[in-house]
Image 1 (cartoon, rainbow, N blue to C red):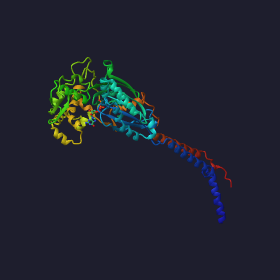
Image 2 (cartoon, protein in one colour; image 1 turned 180 degrees about the vertical axis):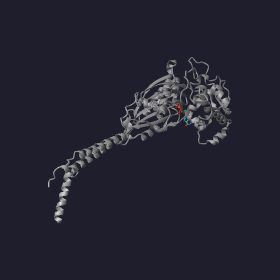
Image 3 (cartoon, rainbow, N blue to C red; image 1 turned 120 degrees about the vertical axis):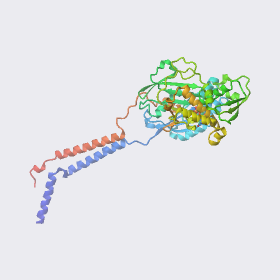
Image 4 (tube, rainbow, N blue to C red; image 1 turned 135 degrees about the vertical axis):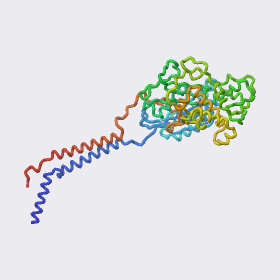
Length: 506
Ligand SMILES: Nc1nc2c(ncn2[C@@H]2O[C@H](COP(=O)(O)OP(=O)(O)OP(=O)(O)O)[C@@H](O)[C@H]2O)c(=O)[nH]1
């Protein structure tokens, strides 16, 4: 009986297998292979498209300014240097001492002065990248002035600098003087690149750069008629967009040279003492006339028969200081439809502005970077600062270099006068200025824009973007694989032999 039952159940099982093709070894094998194949397909797709560990390329730019030299190291993803990778500032180094133009008498020292920061760069850039890392030096207004004064001396400084830079294991690309127009335009490129405005085709930000020997203003005006002053216009095509940029560099209007101009104005007759409203009450220094006039910006104004030194005393009067500062601007002649100052064409201001370099150093110290504060309040605060006795200022800021400390009253007055009287910012448009030092970790200045241009890192046309991001690609492969698998199952179910209706084989 039990043997009979056993034989019956064996027959049932065979019948079941014959009725249901899922239970045949062939079907099971096909299903397993199918699943393995789909898993393998998805795995290969994921691994193939997995972002590989990032490798970087590097570029070095030396900003040889009038007051000092600074070295910047930039880096960007190695596989994306064809225009799509983001360039970031990796490191910076402030060269000790003055700018290279101050070594006109001893040019070799100009080269020597760069050694420490260059050795630092050798450590910062991975050794295997050294030989392919481009190294540029760009000199600005200090060298422009030296070139005007003594071109042989400026050539010797460049030769010394070149000799020094070539000793390092980088790909040296040359040392040259930037024109004021380049300095302004590359500063504008830097600001808008870092803000991602160029790639996204957004409205651009103007750039205001205040150096030691020159100052630049650059912006894209509304309804700009280039032909009015072609020398102030730079046209770019970047990421598929055209830009007509207005830019002007005022040589001698950096804050160090304007201080000379203001002092020269007050020492016209070569007095032995001047009471300067732009310095704090109690400030008192003996200064040398020949040092004051040792610059092409003021050399022709040197008073005849002046003593060797003069006594520079502070008065601390902001209103009077503004009057002194106004004297360095010429507002009388303009052959264009409108001018800023000194007969220079300037279209109406338009959009937001980023103000960097000395604009930032000065306004940050004075706690005046908030431009939503009304201009009248800004002036009141500055007047209070100027009137503060010098010994009190020193006591309050023992950590700050005395030279910088002494000049903040003057520099603040100059910045406000330059912006409002010079460039015509009003009480309303003043709030469109943002005082900035860095944008997303990179210093605002011309160096990044210069390197992006020389390495062709900003394309004229928008780069082709991959049709799908990595995550999208993986998702689509997975969905398609699952779809194929489901169709396969459905296929098996629908076309399995209808064994239940067939005669049973016993
Ligand atoms: N208060 C303060 N002033 C600074 C600092 N660094 C530089 N300066 C001064 O700010 C002014 C502008 O400095 P930079 O932007 O380096 O100008 P630069 O490149 O030397 O000058 P240009 O050749 O005219 O572009 C100069 O008068 C410097 O002496 C700082 O950390 N604090």
